[in-house]
Each structure stands twice: as C-alpha cells, then as structure tokens.
Image (cartoon, rainbow, N blue to C red; front, side, top):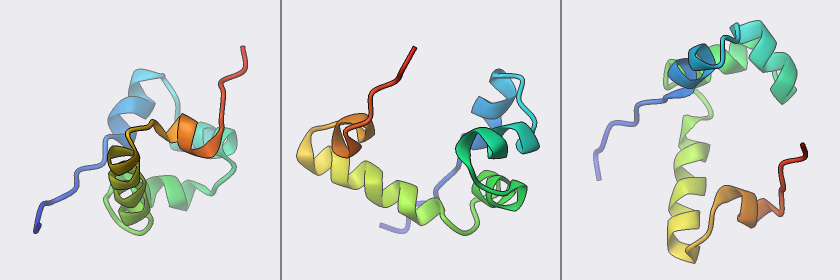
Length: 71
C-alpha cells in the first residue's frame, strides 16, 4: 500500500494524436474529467479498483463489462 498511481491517460492520448477535447467527446465526459484523469485527481481511484478487481477475477476490463470493440 501507499503506492503512488501515475495515470498514463495523457501519454496514450498524445500517442493517438488526440486533444483533451477530442478524447472527452469520444469517451462522453468533459475536458475537465480528462484533465483530472491525466493529473491523477478525481476518478483515478476508480481505475485502480477496476484493475484490482480484474486481477482478482483473472479477467480484462472488457471481459468484466462485456464490452467488445466494434470495427
């Protein structure tokens, strides 16, 4: 415990050549939410909980939520 979470949202967003506004529109959240995720503020703990849940269940987030990427 006591580990410091480092969000990779900004790194991954930039790799896709997306602005915060564009990513927000794709995800259905506000730019402020994207900014918060990128700066390890509100909401980041939720991602950590999902990751721990997936580790405990031996699944991926896609499997957990029944999401399949549509081409």
